[in-house]
Length: 350
Image (tube, rainbow, N blue to C red):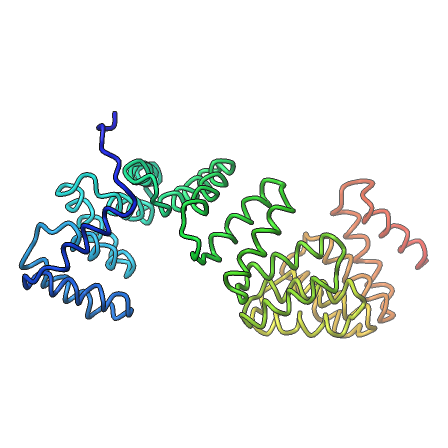
């Protein structure tokens, strides 16, 4: 059972901290410099100042929490965990320390413990937004999508109006999409872009939304913007290749899949799509090379064998084509559309 605790006003921790740093003891000077350096992302220097502050005042919960937060950001999770626990021992109602301890648990894979600490932080400070954002991530990992969505909604309701959090809007959009709420998801992706116009994942997902609506040219626009934001974003390039193919712009589609294979020669799906495009463009030699290589790697994959057969047909190698069609018929379930088409192609070749 939880202890009955006094709820704190959302600004109380800030007021206490300001009162702390307005003093002049040497430990406060170190702490003040540490905070400034941390805000400037000069993390190594900030760590030195925190250690000096804690050497002079080892029971300062604010220094313990802030230094722990810095270590957590640097991936020193176990040490951060111990600092947050000590801060809470000294200041049991310290909501920020409970939230940060939850994040340490989260990084260690202890989701139930993380959830308990985030919940405690939200109870201690009803205006504190961040625990709700963190709870949403835990709920998603636990498959509790409705609760995750609700926690994100609460986070955005509590967060200051000037808050820009494109990642949170994107994550909420993904959860809504997984819940079958595509229109709401699209709105969240748009909000992510309002916060960060170069958020590549949100751009890609909006491309998928437009593609699903058969708004292919709009999808192309978003995929291209995603790649402008992140040239190495393989999924956006793959989707752009599919969109160009849907528009009948086969050469531009070829360029996207060739680029993908240059980055990842082992991508079977990209190679297969490129082979189909080569066949469509009459580049049968290139198509045969791709599908022979793929079939050698995955000989029991009927789709690859069917595409190889079609490429052989285009090249005029009818016997090789018939051999591959026979393999397709053997591999496919009886009566499947692909098996029926393979049978027809064999009859036409006789």
